[in-house]
Amino acid sequence: MIKENNIKFIFLSLSLSLIILIFFFPFFWIITSSFKSPEEIIATSTTIIPRSFTLEHYNKILFNSDFFIYLKNSLIVSFSSMIISIILSVSAAYGLHKLKFYGNKFVEYSLLVTYAFPGVILLVPIYLLFAKVNLLNSYFALIIVNVLFATPFAVWMLKAFFKLIPNEIEEAAYIDGASRYIVISRIIIPLAAPGIASVSIFCFIISWTEYLFASILISGDNLKTLPVGLAGIVGQYQIDWGFLLSGAVLASLPVILLFVFIGKYFVSGLTEGAVK
Amino acid sequence: MNKLKSFQHPYTRGAVNSVKKNNIEGWLFVSPLVIWICLIILVPIYIAFELSLFNVKIIGTSGKFVGIDNYIKLLGKSKFLNASLNSLYWIIGNAICQTFFAFTIALTINYKFPGKKIMANWIILSFIIPTVVVVVIWKLMLSSSSGVINSVLIDIGLLDEATGFFSSPNKAFISLVIINSWRWSPFLALIILSGLNSINREMYDASKVDGANFIQQFFFITFPNLKSVLFVLGLVGTLLSFNIFDIIWLITKGGPSSATTTLPLLIYETAFTKFRISQAATLSIITSFLLLLFSIIFIKSMAPKEDD
Image 1 (cartoon, rainbow over the protein chains, first blue to last red):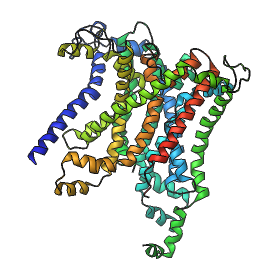
Image 2: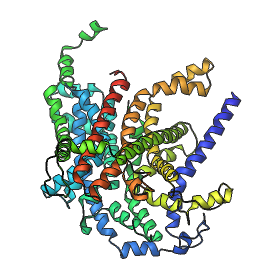
Image 3: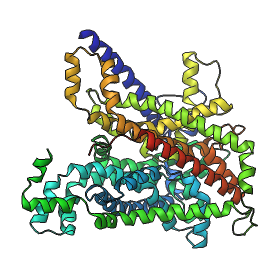
Image 4: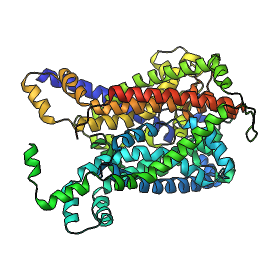
């Protein structure tokens, strides 16, 4: 017994340090680096504990760049995509998992495959299609695509939450004469609220991080999203690292803040049986 | 058992029926999403198919009809073969790397230790930040002139002098696989964790009484019980890995010497840097056909038996 516990302890501490080193240290690194002086960032002898402290990079990105325009665009696109995705996927998940119908399983698996549907295959034809119907350079172009990428997995995540709601509650409501609408708005949605919260955050993240379509469908500077704006700096020949790092930290901040408040629903939503 | 079922209260029997089989209403609830997805996937695929039969070079012009000429030309091209092989290596490399990371994370978080909650919540950080930020992080960390990884490796004595992680074909490919796995593994780990949570604890206790150690427990209880989770991960994970574009494009642009040009990058390059629209469309059609084939075979052969 003691021996097995020892092995467990060694395994645990080894894997814990590996995880912290690989998955958490990089964040420490870019956050601290974003406050370093330009010379220290590009110095050949790297310093784990920063020697200099400066706010010049943040100053530059906040007051001397298009950051706020990109931020506004990203927020508009991500929030709209999120709301549309939630409405569509809650409705679909209810139909799939509460009302069994003919073709149920086929729709479920097709959705799963669509989740992973390679966007790049659609890139050329969607570009041409949107050009034809005058959707290029509009928020709606990005929203249409983001909803497509977010909803399939959202439906899959909601499945677990809907299955947790006992059918008896619904049945009792129907016996009392409640309509479908009442049952959904008063029973299903409140009971699945943590699930809906976690799905919302997932949809938001998908839209917030989307780069490929945003870089092709939008060409006007005033409509670009944050990832595209940042990528513009990455592509430059002489990278201004301080500028880029502070931009990277600021671009991650909104999702991280969102995560602080409803992140635990997201994680428990994933871990408490998304695939049961 | 069946007899018992028919002894339901007359009131609830009707109610049960209204919750179960409900073809029209069921489709009604599903249809908005299904229509949205079909429109945005099927219409473009039709357009791509049409384009692939023509010889369109510049966006907006209509080329002449060439039939399956594009397909024949493309299948014989070494670029296509190279990108397909790269995609295959990419999927395999990511599968190995992500399985290792994801299982390490999931099994670790499954233990009790101080700070477990915080770690479980924040391990997903690499998944929620924009891909471009992932690129920024690793470009800086792996930089040959001022990267922290180079300087640490030199300090430990593993390297004599700074190396360019993206300068040679093999190094670039492996670095990209690791970076992509870094982004995706925590997310996959949480899904594996959901599978672990659904395993009945009593099975572990019972096996302990029978004298099983934790390695035996992993192979005889944990692994078999993760089947449905691993099915989803195998299917979705493969397709998602295939799909990766931005990490590769923003770091290596497919280089050096096309070593990291996977099919998605080839499609992008053909369409938006070489402006060969019909060729890109043909590539898209071939690619979707291959992936569809993979998905059907995978679902048919691996789908877990339904228990509900």
